[in-house]
Structure formats: structure tokens, C-alpha cells
Length: 252
Ligand SMILES: NC(=O)c1ccc[n+]([C@@H]2O[C@H](COP(=O)([O-])OP(=O)(O)OC[C@H]3O[C@@H](n4cnc5c(N)ncnc54)[C@H](OP(=O)(O)O)[C@@H]3O)[C@@H](O)[C@H]2O)c1
Image (tube, rainbow, N blue to C red; front, side, top):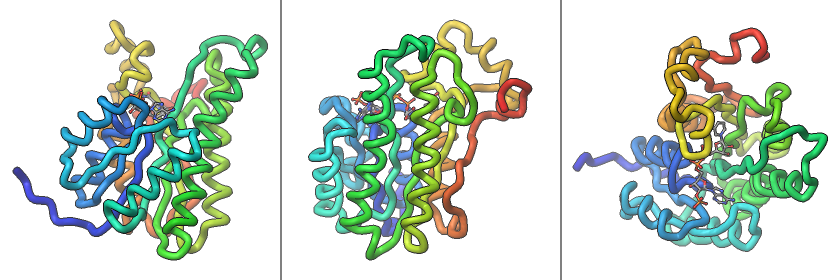
């Protein structure tokens, strides 16, 4: 077993029982943070806590948009670790595929509730409970879908663009104590994105100048940087982590 020197910092990461959130938890644990992860499925969350290391990780089950869950997650993090320096708003949803002309508005509301309003709720609660007096940072996981028109996933793209503006708004209001940035990934190999590459990964990867799809560790590395002292003069930015796909015509 490798011993990691503790950083003294604590991060709350939403939607982290698998995929990108889990990759971010691994990256922050590797540099010595203690971490609270959330997710809806309690069993999956327990398994993730065990796999990541229950000595430095706790799990709080719940739906990201549920305000009571947001409050409990922040409270439990403070009880367990005494602080909550970093918030990573990673939980997100993309439940529909099709033209927005026919989009069910209740589905649009759900997408906004889960992706945008949840991130704001967690950002309010960590601010009042810890960050306004003690500082820290926030990273919102958005998407390249929020940076241009995204055919057939319009509601998702609009919600991610709103999160990028939420990032700028929070960065302005929470300065100088708290830095707030976004990471906008292209396709990262997770359950969420599986349909986009399953059975055709080589073909999908060929579209990327860097020759491969993303993996959760790519986003973990970016989140570790943005929540570190190396990024101390960076706030309100969206860091595109996309294997270069945005360099291509039609992607900008
Ligand atoms: N993968 C990509 O290509 C890609 C690209 C750009 C942006 N993103 C963004 O990255 C984030 C993570 O996606 P991912 O690919 O890692 O997805 P994933 O593999 O499906 O993992 C999602 C994680 O979030 C949890 N979760 C889902 N909905 C939740 C909710 N309403 N409340 C609380 N937890 C919830 C899931 O656990 P439970 O199911 O148990 O709740 C799971 O732990 C999302 O915001 C997504 O929009 C992904």
C-alpha cells in the first residue's frame, strides 16, 4: 500500500460513484485530499467508497437536485473532515435525443434542475458552510456541447452553456476568496457516453487530433490542477479538455 502525504484539503464531488466523478476523486486522493462523493444508488456508492479507500472517503447518497441532500452532503463532509475546501459539481443528466422543436418542456425543466440548479444549490451551501470564511474553489463539469449548437442534444447543450455562465457569475461574486472554473470535456469513456462509441471506438477516436477518446483520469488531472495552488490566479474560465476535437472545422 502506498502512503500518501495528506494535503489537509477536503473536496465534495457530486456524482462520483463511477465515471468522471470517480476519476476526479482518484486524482484528488492521489494528491492527499480527503473526499466526500455522492450518487443516487447507495450500494454503488458504498462500493466506490470501499474501492477508493474508506479511511479518506465518505459517501452521501441522494439526488443532486434535492436541497435536503445538498445540505446533508455538506454537513456530513464537515462532520467527517472538519472542512470543505473544494466543490466539484459533476452530477449531470442528458435524458433525451431529438430536435428541440419537439422537446417535452418537463424534460427540459428536469435537465436544468439536475445540471444547473443543483450546481447552484451545492455552490450556495458550501459557500455558507465553509468557503465564504475560509476560501476554496469550485469546478463545474460542463461539456463541449455547451460551446456550440449541439444537434439532437439541445437541452443538454443549453444547460451546460448555462453552467459555464454560472461559473463566471459565481467566480465574480465569490472572489477573492473562492475561485470558480469549468471543465468542458468532449467524449470521455464512461457509461454516460457509451452509446457514442460502443462498437466503433476506433472510428470515433479517429476524429480526435490526439487520436483517442478521453478517459476519466484526463478530467481528474484537469480538476486537480484547477483546484490546486498552481491555478491560484485562474477564475471564471472554461477549460476545454477534448483531445483537440474543437480544432476541427464544424466544432467551433
Ligand atoms: N462522458 C462524457 O463523454 C462526458 C462529456 C462531457 C461532459 N460530461 C459530464 O460529466 C459528468 C459525469 O458524466 P459521466 O460520463 O461520468 O457519467 P456516468 O459514468 O454515468 O456517471 C455519473 C455519476 O453521477 C451519478 N449521478 C447521475 N445522476 C445523478 C443525480 N441526479 N444525482 C446524483 N448523482 C447522480 C451516477 O451515480 P447514480 O446513477 O447512482 O446516481 C454516477 O456516479 C456529467 O455532468 C456529464 O454531463 C460527460
